[in-house]
Amino acid sequence: MRTITTIGVIMLIIGFLSSALGAFPLVDISASSAPIDEDTPFSTQLVEETSGKIGTMYSTIIEDIASFADNPDLALAQSRLDEMTVYAEDLATRTQLFANDLQQKLDVITTAPLAPTGLTAQANSGQVSLDWNDNVEPDMAFYNVYRSTQSDQGYERQTGVEGTTFTTGQTTYIDSGLTGGAIYFYRITVVTTTGESDQSAFAGATVSSDSSPPTVPTFFDGDAVTDDPEQLNLTWRAPSEDEDGGELTGLSSYQIYRAASSSGTFELVGTSTEAAFTDTGLAAVTTYFYQVEALDAALNISLRSATLELTTSGVVMPSDVRLVSTTSSDAGSSPVVTISWTASTGAILRYEVQRTTVANSTNDADYTDIVPNNSDTSRQDSTVTRGQTYYYRVRAEDVDNRFSDWTTPLAVTVSN
Image (cartoon, rainbow, N blue to C red):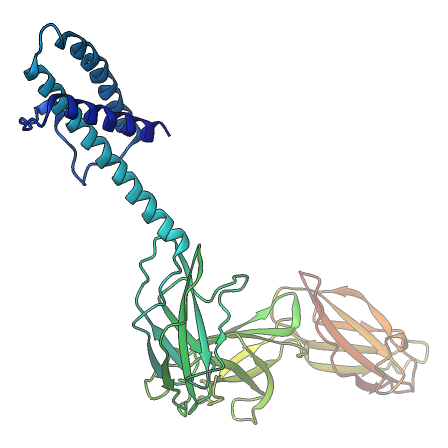
């Protein structure tokens, strides 16, 4: 408000002096009164400085006019008028710069953003790659991508990063998981603080079909699980391209096969969407053989990997169990059964031996312990009865208190 008032006062003074003194040709502008140009930044301080100088000159001019009646000094009056004119022009220029700057800001706030330009669509197997020119709006926030199967209608916004309300913040976008042979059309909008632009001109592409399988999974490896002898963990490196060297359109899953021997029949035991698989429900200390194959998004299946051989963890069962029955001719002497076996591999703490009179029993309650349990690989049982048939089994316990499976019960008949 003060700026407008000052300009009005300036114009009144200039008008008064011009009518009172007549039209005088303007003299050269002094260095201290140099006007600004359009490149000079506008600021309130500059306006106030100019207004202050005009106010000071106004007071000086009033004093000078009062002395004109007695001693007219036209040169002084002309000088004052020239200075007033220069400063008034400076102030008007600065005010106009401010108005221009304000108008530009208003234009940004009230003008809708322009639609993006330069949209191109490049089709690949199962996907379309989009690219467009970057918008120049200073408050540009992000872009929305719209897709349709018709060029003139039915466009729907594509979902962006999870949790966002826009498609992308980049000037590129890859639309994947598309149907081979289908035609897709796209339009782009830009979103700024003032809203969303109109949709761009459309661009379309025909998605090619993928008939090439992925390359074979490599670096197939695995490990036994120490704390779980019924489990094996498998890992491999995912394919990075198609078998023909083309671009991989995306992996769908893997199929894992298992066999009891390297030359045996491999059967499907599971699938995985990651380059890893855990096979469970296995037998302890048992060797298994595995192969894996990859499926891409078009369900093309790769060749199978090299065969992987893995053995589950656990304690190795004693082997080669032998039973010997000894009966003395002395009827008063007790017969003896000697049990011996081949030691288990690993850090074995002790062996357990049990017997039963029930053939083929798997019920632990039917068995009696033959002690003492120690690390020896033979044991004698002197509690047997002449003419009775007994069934013996053996198992090992390691230093981690893990047990092997029981050996198959072996029969012996004590002679009379």
